[in-house]
Length: 214
Image 1 (cartoon, rainbow, N blue to C red):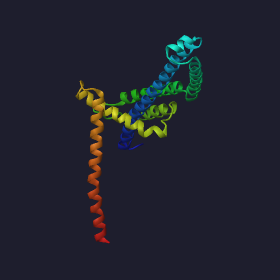
Image 2 (cartoon, rainbow, N blue to C red):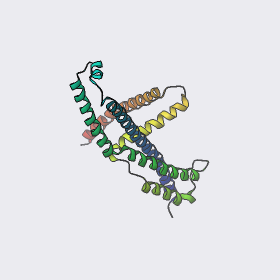
Image 3 (cartoon, rainbow, N blue to C red):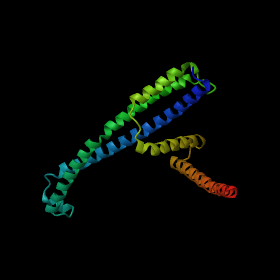
Image 4 (cartoon, rainbow, N blue to C red):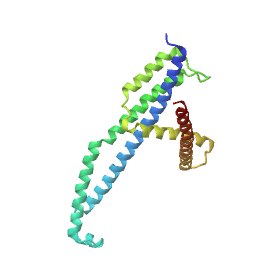
């Protein structure tokens, strides 16, 4: 039987990772959705322009102070560019990526509900449900795409920033979000710089002690 303290620590770790993972997948879902809709809307807009000017007469080009030959060259270049963007859009497949991360959010949220049901009023855990919690966690992990390694640090920072901003929103509900975000970034930067300055004298003192004892 597992040590209760070890079991509680592991459950707490999984619960923390679970919340972070939901946030990361949510960020990726929203990012890929925005990219897909932005490019798709742009393609539609320029395609309508291209279709509307396909049979345009010389008077249309004269209206925009462009010669007919230059105008047709521009439309030809635009059509090739639209085709190229369409190929890229199919290649990167942002819609499918967004759907995968949407499903991942659903999978991890289902596991989150299992954890919440096992959490007691005093914020401790019902150890009788430990196996159920571990099973729900690993099932969500199995059924969901992995977080890309090259985006992990950026996603973790985005998630933790969102958590801090959300906490400040409760305290200052009328303050614009971008100001709260700037506050969190400024405070974190100042704290990091202060920690760096404090560590330098400490390292210098350690070097002096090592020199005296040698």
